[in-house]
Image (tube, rainbow, N blue to C red; front, top):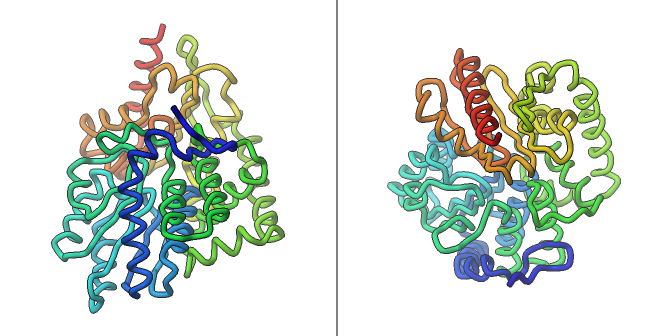
Length: 375
């Protein structure tokens, strides 16, 4: 039986009880690192869920020696691992923490390097993971681990806020971060609080512009000043409204029986690299503007280097899985796809240069095959 807080945040359900030992271990490691002045590098994913993870970990560490930085990819790249390793030289027993990313197959090579160098590595994530990658980590906190019985609805920022609370961070502040995380990642546990939704959008907006120095402190200050985040919210909302208005003439809607497929040309709608909204956000906003409520709908956004998926609740309930489609495409088109993954209802593919048409056509074909089988 679930025991959730009144606003939907899972407080003590079965999954949380099973994850408690791992979270307590994470809290002990972070508290000890902060208390003893150990060098800690935290990388968090570039969205609201990732940012709330970064803030929570910054609070848990309470150390000026901790470096909190945004990661621009869902992969822990080998080049980033080499850079991190060079920055750790001279420090005794450094700690690397990745939040909301970094447990996928594409991150395995970088983790192998860190393990060979003797770096203690912790990943706190809620995406489906690679077991081979997880086996290289010092500690892996995830609702998808065997025996946990959880889903991606247990967002990374929520998990990090719970870990930070165990480590002694302010419980009220961590509870708000948990709510922001769940809202930003559209978890089933998300509340319908309008202010929380606005703050989550602000974090997504700021994440688009890359890394900020002292990221944990920077984002924490923004969230604490209403006049600041409301200004960012207004700008972000204006940009999203422009995409909604432009979506109909630029996007194509295919109907396969009762299923709608919205094809979104991202380069005609998206602001571009390091601008808001991101390609994934653009895909979601355009598809939301055109889909029919109560019906299974899938959005497929495409550009020269990316293919993004978004799916409605009805599509997911009917068995749609962007993650499974991406896994199949990676096997069928290994020379066209650099990387890909995510959730069943929100995922993306990094496409090799010159392969965009091939990957888009294959993604559409897989989605239409799924839709036809529903008839």
